[in-house]
Length: 246
Length: 280
Image (cartoon, rainbow over all chains, first blue to last red; front, side):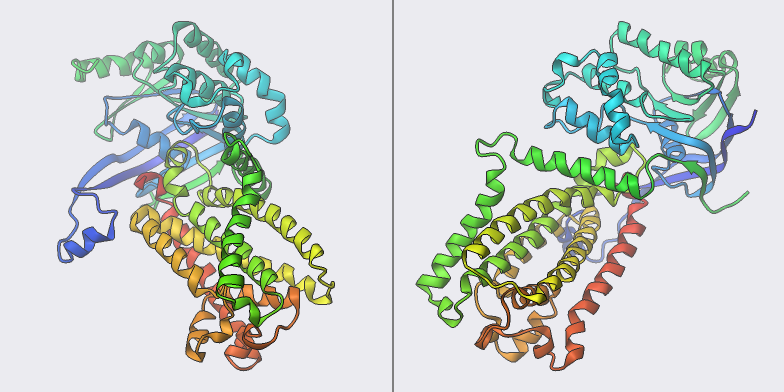
């Protein structure tokens, strides 16, 4: 098997200002006061690889750098150091349900987000009914999204996400919201991705989910890779080191 | 191991010219539709607003202040200036906050952030085309004779579009760092309405003021557009960058400014754009 993703020595530090200055007034009132920052080392020398066709999980406590890593893989954030190499068509779906326009209906949001994610007009036309059917939101297609519940938004977002062609899919906490019946539908798509040999990188706090679907799991803590191996090994390690959080 | 950040081999369906054009078409069309969805008069507002604006200026300057006495084509001069000005100001105004407003989308999808301000400007472009259609009807009613120079409208509009987009990109990237830019632009747009010789002949300004005014490429584009569409005017209306800066080379002063602005805007937007998702 060849590597679908290679990450070598990736580091990322955020400089978080102690006070936000977005107005010129703040610069004029304190012309000689230097901005001071908190350094948040989100990722420190992270290295790993994901094989083609692998279902790869990333776990860790809140603030461990999981979402930052996913965004770096997606090309949304730029790493300070290191190399990221991705082979194949990449489709990132991060913070599902966020970023929709609440003043537009589901129909227009599907068109805009589908187009931004790379679907052509004909692909959108072909898949439009399928997206609505999977989300079970046909009756609400012409309602503005501000009237949707958070569960409905996630259903719509996930239904759209799985219609985007990809070789490598990045998913962040996709099932944090949503009822049990819809979660089972999502699990069925995971099975299909596995059968089709798709590479999926999946961030979640759901350890049972990791055990059920992932071939390997990476444990991140304070931006450092603490473990990488089979789900059982890494989850045991996670529970051992962070018993309170699990 | 490299110590410089690299991202290699990543293939996305979100690159390439066809993708860019698709996004501009879909997002622009839906934005335009959304602007008038809940309005009783719908798209009619896109034409009514500039016409109402024009009506007020025409009443004040053609009748009450009698500026129109200085040229017989004042009505068309005013309309051309106003249509171009509204396109310029509205486009920059809608592009300016677009990156901040589209922050959530930038934090979850990987695509070129330039598409956000560009697609925001498309709805204004559609409004402009509707207004140009209304202007054409009015021009036919006024019985303007067709002129060979009319083809020069195309390069002039390209210049206006490039200038507008460059300024919009620059300000939208600056707005991420400094929210004051929004207030500064609102004030500047108000000042420009008076400083751009839209409703008075630019020739009534002193020479030095004309030289300063033509440093603004919008003034050059508007004046050239008027002269190209309506022919040489008489008196204080017959002023262009060529006459103000004396000599053929003078024509290029505003164009050089546009080119410099484009280079600065692209460089700044590209540099800042890499970090928009982190800063928003």
